[in-house]
Structures are given as C-alpha cells and as structure tokens.
Length: 271
Image 1 (spheres, rainbow, N blue to C red):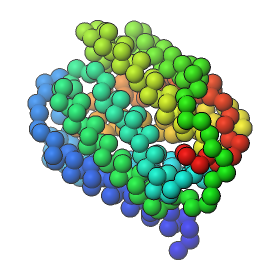
Image 2: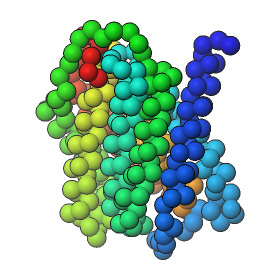
Image 3: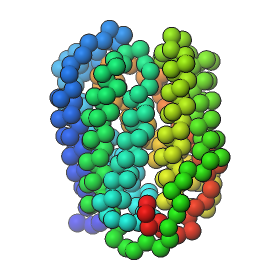
Image 4: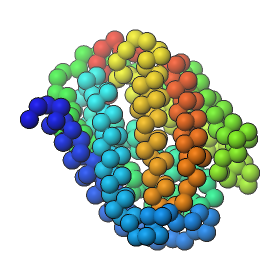
C-alpha cells in the first residue's frame, strides 16, 4: 500500500482506539439527571451508542490528523511529541468543559474532563508512536508565553464571547452567573493563548496570515467544532447556536493569532 493510505489507516486506528477509551470513560461516569435540555433523538430511539461510536471515530481521527501539520518541526522523544499535542488538545477541551452552562452539573466538571482528557492522552501516545519524528532537533526555544500576543488572543476571545452573550444572546449562564462566566472567559482565553503560542512554534510559514489561519482556523477551529458537536449526540441542542459560537470563537482566536511572532527559524529540542 502507498504511504498516504497507510497513514489514513493509522489515523483511523488512532481514532478508533481513542473512541474506545472514551466510551469506557463514559461508562464509568455516574448517570445524572438534568431538566434543562431534552435528550437527543439518538438518546430517545436508543441509537446513541452507535452514533457516538461512528462520530467519535471520525472526530478523533480528524483531530489526530491535525498533528501532521506540526510534527515535522517538533523535536525530542517520539512519544513525547505526540503526547504534548494530546496535552494541548486536553487543555482546550477541559477549559470548555468547565464553562458555566445551565445544564452542567458540578460533578460533570470533574468526570467529563477526566474521561475526555484520558482519551486525548491515549490519542497523543498513539500519535507519537505512529507519527513521531526521529530526526535530531536543531535549535532550542523559549517556553515562555509571549506576553503581548498572549494578551491579545485572550482579549479577542473575551470580546467575541461578550458579543455572543450581550448582543446575540446565545445559550449560556451569563444572565444568572455573570461574574463566574466572565472569569471563565478570562481563563479560557488564557489557556487558548498558551496552546496557540506553543503550537505556533511548529507551524510552517513566514506569513502571519497563513500561520494564523492554520492555528486559529484548523488547529483550534476544527478541534473546537468537533468537540462542540459531540453535544447533539446526547442533547437536543440548538444547532445554529452551536455553529454561531464555534465560528465566533474560531474567528476571534484566529484574529488574535495574527499577533504571534514567527518563531520558525529551526526545530526545537524541548518541544
């Protein structure tokens, strides 16, 4: 078989393994009750396990494929290369799972991050094993978050969220938990900024626009879209609302990523 076909099969294998781990994690989560959102059509007709499995394989395989955008510039141990990417995905997913929403129970802010985080870590391990680079690194880079670009990405994210809450009126806890929601926006913006600044070191391209589109549009935006659309498998979610919040967050982060410097002068020995 040709290399592209082998790589596709590897990605599907990673997506399948990650989905299995996530299903095991889901089975370990205590069953709770919430009255805010109705169950999805899949939950009502009993097909949710099948729908979750099919979508999970697709989503995790595609998220794994995004690693190929940065793997040629990462350095260090092969397994650690993929694991760091898994940790970056974990950080974004977990901070979104901590978001104050009316249907989210306090226990869910612990159990779901653990289940999703474990699945993404397994994905990272498999990515490092199957796709990690073995060539020697060239140059070490600073691990510090660039202060001004990090602040700009954070502020762009907050601005986008305020537009969603105050002007558009998306589904949220903002009217009842304004301070908590704003604090979450600050935390989420900071975490996203850290993830984008780290990924920026491995994105190819001297053009700020190109790098911001790869970072915000693909590495963040595609990941966020796939994350958000796990929700309609469980609840009767407002699809236009999900699309709008996903596009707004993606646009805000992409604009913020324009502030990130070009750090692609060589490979990195520490990741």
